[in-house]
Length: 336
Ligand code: SF4
Ligand code: MG
Image (tube, rainbow, N blue to C red; front, side):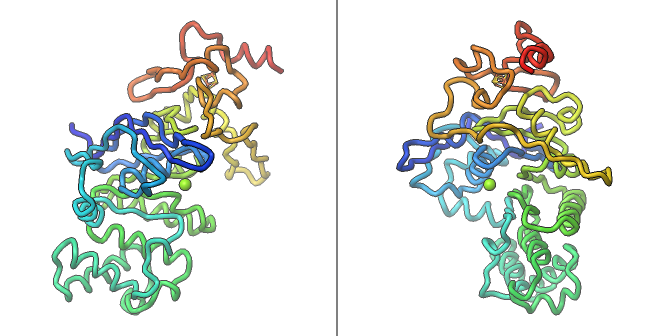
């Protein structure tokens, strides 16, 4: 089957006063129709830059796509004109952000913003667009949709704005929805509702979703597959179940340990991953995680690890997966 989206060897740099930053280094992955793929990692890992590249949102300068391709429904998005890209963005790829105000127009009634998208991208008549917009507000769980249609974004609560943004992004039934930390700013209850809503919509409309988050709890609840990014590279990629049961990268181990346990009433301490986030100005020659990794070997400092195939659809970029490497438990005994 042809993938809906196929990102191949994507490289993105940013020119800054401090020098050239390699924000995304040879990132490859795919998304199939109707599936939810999560990208996890801390800030500076390259997850936002990766999806911004898909959306044609890399500010240039200072950003620059240095190589690779992004195939979407058979077209390389990196070769499209601004006009062609705008067309695809409105109709085939939708995006929701952490802060709804970055995509909602504060000067326009919410209902009109949804209707406008339908008129522009789906050739709806004015009357039909209005009906559909009210239907979308209802679908995302906004009470009194008829009345809410006539309100401005500032008259909505934070959670409702998030829903309105989802309604706009989904109005044209995009094949792909990109959600960059869509629930980070929301409180836990609303966060759960918004995630539930996204899952429901994915089922109902068969929309594929790329969900960016730094929260593995969210991944477990929502996604089918996951990419773990660190220092601009994908360090591990697997089905969600496989990642939780058989993680094979020390950074992933750290992330899994830092999930707060919500099932027990007794509050578990959050275990942060030791060391500072990756230095993107002068990334280590070898593995980007080496400065923080308690398993680092000589080769880790010298050479970027290859992607080891762990099982079907599961890869890990870590030398520990080489059959000649010592077993991780040996390190634990030696190092502590
Ligand atoms: Fe640690 Fe080496 Fe694996 Fe990198 S390649 S995560 S430094 S063991
Ligand atoms: Mg980000």
